[in-house]
Length: 382
Image 1 (tube, rainbow, N blue to C red):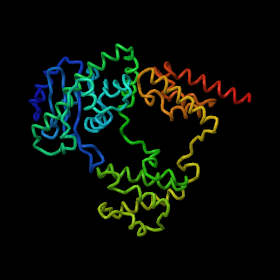
Image 2 (image 1 turned 90 degrees about the vertical axis):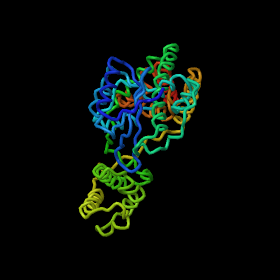
Image 3 (image 1 turned 60 degrees about the vertical axis):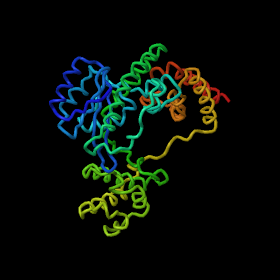
Image 4 (image 1 turned 60 degrees about the horizontal axis):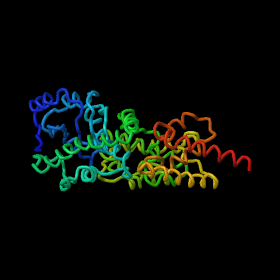
């Protein structure tokens, strides 16, 4: 099917008329974010069983029409590995779409492939080999070639077909409720793309090796960098590299001029920005201990580590019986958290664990809890 390129409001209005009354559409986006903080939307692809359209938001103001279409919760939107698409649309529309059907998640509940790529899934389920030649193309460049348009259209043409195949399999295996539970989490998290600043130090490579007092400096600089990156719409690294943040924390400058060796000339900081950075570091150096970032974690003892190993084997066996990846069922980190939280009164933290919710709890969570409880009682007796 040849995709239609939508480059005007009049064509977009015609498309909306054609889509009137539909309850299911396939959606994909093309974007660019190599040099900017915010992703730049370059194309939105839409498909049904009879329509394939590529909407060019650079050619006209597509936002009102896309809001009407993509923010309608009566229409289920099919994506494959939706997180980046939802983030791009969140910044473009001001809100991320709801009512999401993610084919990567659907496949993960059916096979051992937890994060299968779109092209591989199309080949596995539909027997079609997709052209991958445009994977690294610059989608902001105009005019778009016919090859680019066809490539972009194929991303949703087969996506629409995949949904029907995967959904039938989910229902046959009695796992549609599993999928619905996973999808509800997407809806709950759909507008969480704005970066939380309380633990930004974790995004700085090498920070985990530092003392908590040095981490306080890293955290403060990271917040300053994040805010400036947003203001200038530049990548974090273009503002200040992770290596330089670490060095500034290890050997903080005593005056503004001492900042110079750490600042990339291409960043072009003005005097006000340099002053803000210096004051940020100075304030962090005098930060009270109770405000230092907490990089401590619960270290399991030898008995608990042995228990983790035994539980991992159980999870692996159950995952094999179910024909899915052990990681999507219960990761090693999940097990460690479950053991660490055992006997602690913090029910809120326990309730956040995936393994204690929904289909995972029904499949293995209850057994894991009982095993941990019995192990704890045996250790107390001995």
